Image 1 (cartoon, helix red, strand yellow):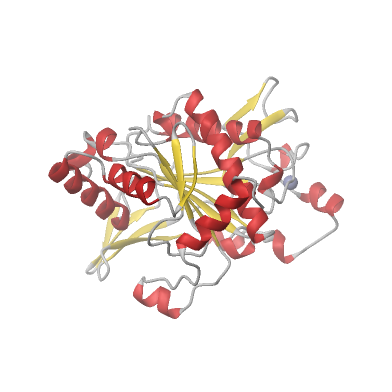
Image 2 (cartoon, rainbow, N blue to C red):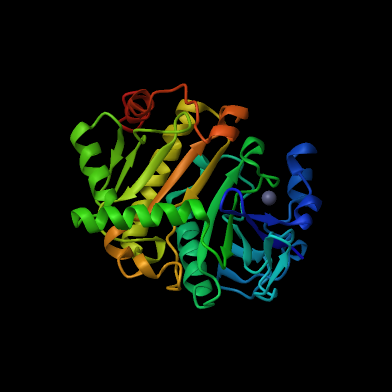
Length: 343
Ligand SMILES: [Zn+2]
């Protein structure tokens, strides 16, 4: 059983999850492609190798081939839905049973190791699945904060090469995220508009960090990018999260993501990366109450794609400040020229 522990010195939480140690690492044991697919628990035809599915886009019966996306519980989960929400005290410290949900979204039945091989339809099915899972899990009032992320490649901490996304739903809001929501709330109260609106109008005015624009989204290389070639996708209109996006906007986002990720592949080759969705809390409780009702106005759907080209060192770990050797303006310029077909 995992445990959520409160870090008294840093005002942060840590998940202590020994089960995670037993994960098989497919990157450590490279094998011929056919052999890999036979052993891959996420490939079509190998449904019996995963726990029974929670959700799938399919027209036939569950746990059989014939699906477009599948969602299963993570076998090596960091938190579990069966845990009681009870705390224990260890002297000056506090810990809780590891309550939460840890799901794996199998993005596509195809064992694709590069995301530029995805079709726009695959992007749409993937986003539709993520949206469905949040909509379902938010009915459990114990789950307050959702971390939605994708690890792609060894340097991005992935242990399965088959495209997949993870969803970890927690009963607490991580401190760093909470600070972000409070700051966005203060900004909104002072100026009566969202901090994201300010960022977008500055970026659209400057233009040099804009990678591409669509009807509903803008893709930028953030002004203070912490990673080389990092990009952010931000919704133009008020929509605080994925669940506030209708199918039309999801189609637009599918197109935007495909063009952005294709451009990153052209620029960086076969690269490792993380995608993180900037999701707001889904429950109003004593912690989120000060800003919860304002979220639709103050927050915006956004996500980050973070290439993991350089590894983190002691300076980054110790100071929280990253050294990024590529100016965001140069990264945006290169990506924009690919998107616009100039290269
Ligand atoms: Zn596979």
